[in-house]
Image 1 (tube, helix red, strand yellow):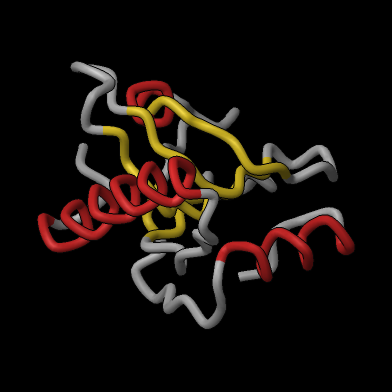
Image 2 (tube, rainbow, N blue to C red):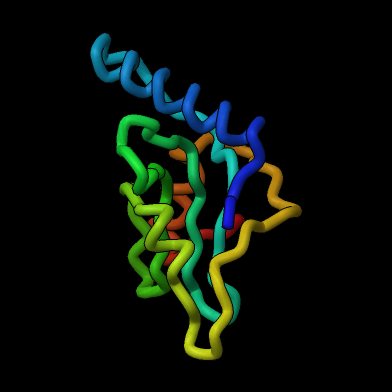
Length: 120
């Protein structure tokens, strides 16, 4: 199961390269999320901004992760693990097809920290 189109993957990879360059020069790096993933029937949501193409077969993505415990945080997530994840009733992680990012990741992070959940 693929979570993103080839165009979205290209943007995720470009964001990763920009982030690496920004860390080397201590520049700001605050991209818009590219995709939103969620597990139906749970509070689990991920706003993904970057994809590490150096991570081998198990692609690793970066973004705002909310496991539904009231403490969303920035971090890395294995896409293989998301593909295998199921809810109690057998539903799988889906891409929010209607998601349109309206602000940079830092704004979603600040809001999620204040509200205890991702609101996107």
